[in-house]
Amino acid sequence: LYESTSELVREMLHQETDMSGFYEAVLVAEKVITELVQAGKFIYAGNLLGYLAELRDQISKEKPMWAGRLKDACVTAGSRERLNILCQSLNSHPEVGQAEFRSYLGHFGWEVLSGLTDLMGDFKNETHQEAIGDFLAERGKEHSQLVAKGLSDKSTRVICNSIAILGKI
Image (cartoon, rainbow, N blue to C red; front, side, top):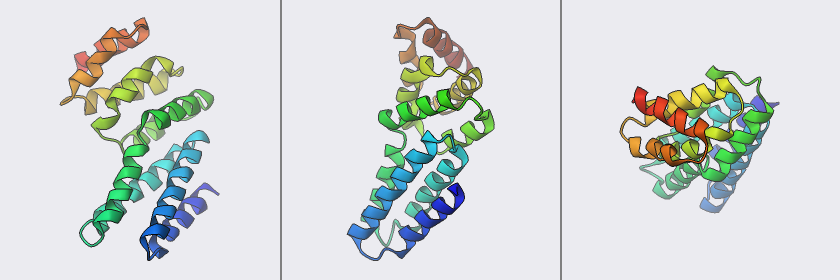
């Protein structure tokens, strides 16, 4: 079901010939990604998110506005609102493995560092916390100030995690 839904969204994106229809298809893709995250289906959500990035790169020269919309969708997937949804989903789905979650996080850049740092204390599962810590250490190498803001958090757990992450950096 999840794979066929993702494939259907991909087809919708390819079949649109006008800008408004394409924008609507991207909006559908964003909603599907959010639903997949809420359902704890991070492999499918990541695959669709990765596809949006690939399509953006493919059409960037011939349709720059369309590519811009795809870029916005990818950035929005890492927004604070969507990261809150991600946190709630992971807390509801402790069975999601570290590899699956890391694969999903791999679709994001440094832009999500601040939001993830803020949420570090809200993730209940240790496996998920480790994946976030590894991601923050890897992506935070050139943006350590975003991870360092966790040092001023109210939660001792966030402070300790921030120290450990900064130690890895």
